[in-house]
Image (cartoon, rainbow, N blue to C red):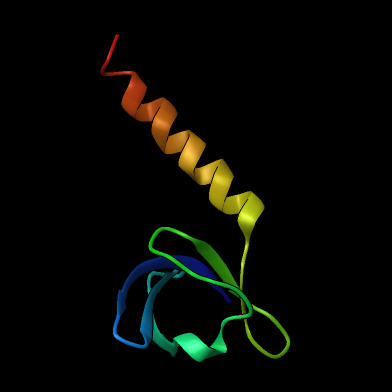
Length: 70
């Protein structure tokens, strides 16, 4: 299971999954600190932030937004 953190509401992390479903996961179920926009996936025991994929997607968005600056 893989998705993007949509928002954090209290102790619950709302994740928009790649199949367009939305799940809520307790923040305690993450191995590391999580924030809005992070790409995450379900590991064997906990949810994990995919740092590489998060950076890749952020760069893609920045490049797209820079199209309007030119």
